[in-house]
Amino acid sequence: MNEFERLGFGLGGLPFLGAARTRSVCPENPGGEKGAGGMAVPDPAKYPFSPAAGDLGQGWKVSPFRKVASGQTVTIMDVAGPGVIQHIWLVADPARGRSHVLRFYWDGEPEPSVEAPVSDFFAVGHNKFAPVNSLAVIVNPASAFNCYWPMPFRKRAKITFTNEDKDELGLLTYQVTYAQVDVPENAGYFHAQWRRAVTDRADPDYVIVDNIRGQGKYVGTFLAWTQLSDGWFGEGEIKFYMDGDKKFPTICGTGTEDYFCGSYGFPETYSTAYAGNVLKHAGQNGPPKWSLYRWHIMDPVCFGEDLRVTIQALGWWPNGKYQPLADDVASVAYWYQQEPHAAFPELPELARRWPR
Image (cartoon, rainbow, N blue to C red; front, side):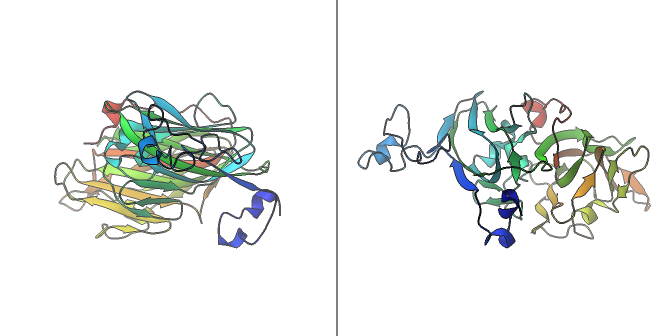
């Protein structure tokens, strides 16, 4: 068992000791250095919480959060490797979640391996808070986003946060916990990509992700689905085209609710370790909306050369035949692969990301 494996990433690995050392980046220790936490000295011009800490001084919660101006990008994390991110806790405003964008860069790459609006990355769709209680992602009241996807890096890990909202974000706080540890040669890099499109009745296939090249594992799907048609929307099949598949996929589902580990029309919301329907918005103040996640933690989709993932927008006509749907679908795809990765499609501007 190597040092990376000793981390365990679960209960089974906890008893095994090794050379890994834990570090954490937050506003109280921006660089994550050893013995450098809580060093900020009260200064109202620099740290908004300084008046609260004024009587106590250095070491007493002087810099627990940051402000982010409209249009500003701040670096949350920029540390040298090798290592692996094990937990991210971040607090931001879910109601403005698509105004805020996360980007992760591994080993000095110029383009991000993760690019997604904050809320969707943490399985919160439509800028509408909903609690999530899963293994990979936990969202707690009222705005606490948590992620437990392991994210190895060899040379460097950089995470940025961009505020594209018209207003300043008055409170951004976070804690990124990682282990300094050698990373095995066969460990892939974590990727996540956001997309959005309105499906077409003539061709109601929604592309969750495509143009993944090389060997990897597909590990999760989040869908923020907005119905633009009456009735049920979830008859469509998810399809995984891998390793040269053209017209027909290697893996084909049997229905949308089936893929998200439910059945018979999502009669209620649920949030489990591996799958959930955490938002069932019945159409008040806008069209019906759903927030759905499926984590392939126990059943990763392994591919060797390439991968494309699609899902059909499909309902019923009154005569009992399938009805292709024109629905508004946004998604985040999560996967591991070796670098370099293919270029992502350009992230749509805020007006095209904003929910209906």
